[in-house]
Each structure stands twice: as structure tokens, then as C-alpha cells.
Image (cartoon, rainbow, N blue to C red; front, top):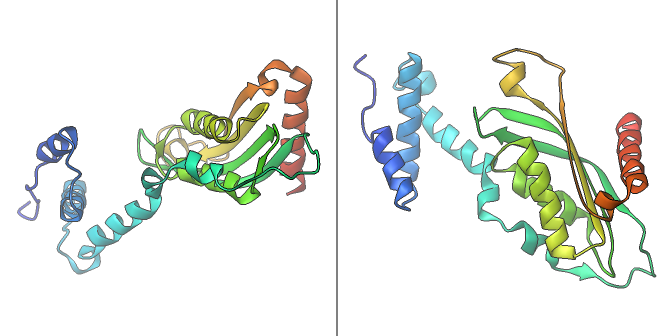
Length: 214
């Protein structure tokens, strides 16, 4: 096929990343053209001519989390005047849109994030932002769950943190075993949530109750 784009070669782009040079936008668009040609189509035909640009723009949106610091976002500002409140803070039903690092296929679901304050709390929207920052990177659901919990623990220094994520993975619903409707559930418990089974159960029950009512 004479429309296959041979440069910049994939090996050359990989070497650039290895030595610390981020590929350019032009490199990214050339890579998309190569993939289109490899799939068997002509990247120069009318319907595909602008696809490399669109894909590059989509990748900027899908993976914008690489340029953001979740701990910094969650740390400032925090609120210390909470009227003595020290019970569980739980934000349920945070939408998760991420891409698995194995196939760059979407996985979509919801996250529930809870913590026990230790004198200060964060704005609720900041919890959702932390989930989004880590979700907008190449991920596994297991790593995403642990990263969110760790960021909340480091930023707020609470007495405990609990995170639950459920998601459907397109790498197994639209390819491979093709099992639509199957979802994965992951949890991470730190501090008091790790030590207290009753507290864990309370968190899990509250998350499921929220899922049913939603």
C-alpha cells in the first residue's frame, strides 16, 4: 500500500520518549496516520484526512490528568471550621471515564470516596476532581483506586480513607471475551477503615444504597 506513512518510525518515537523528549503534535498525528494505514485504509481519503488531528485533540482531553497534581488540588483550600464534625464524609456516584493501559480502551463507571476528618475537610468538588485527574491517565482500575485513596490520605491526613470503584471495561465488552454488562469492583481502605470491619461495612452499605437509589 503506497499510502503507508513510514516516518517518523515507531521505533524512533519510542527512543524519543526514552531519552525524555516528548513527541510533538506532528509526531502524534503521523502515528495516527500510520495506524490507519496499518488497519488497511487510506489516511488521505476525504473521510479520514482530518482524523489524525481529531484523534490528537481527543488524546489531549482523554489524558489531561498527566499535567495535573491531585494532592495540590485537594490540599488548597481546606476548611477547619466544621463545627466539631468528625464522622464519615462520603461523596457517592462520581463518574469515572478512563482508559486501560493495556488496550487504550475505555472503562466507565462510578467512584465513591469517603474519609474520616482529622480537624479539616476539603470541598466536595475537590474529591471529584481527584478522581478525574487520575482517571484522565492510562490506568488499571486497581491502580486508579489506590491512587485516589493515597492522594486523599496525603492531602488531608484524615483518620481513614475508603474508595470504591465499579466500572465496565470495553477491552472485555467490545473485544476479547465480549461480556457486556460485566463490571469490576475495586476497593482501597486506609487507616481506620482498614482497621475497623464495622466501619468498612458501613461505607460499603452506604455506597450500594446510593447506587440503588440512583
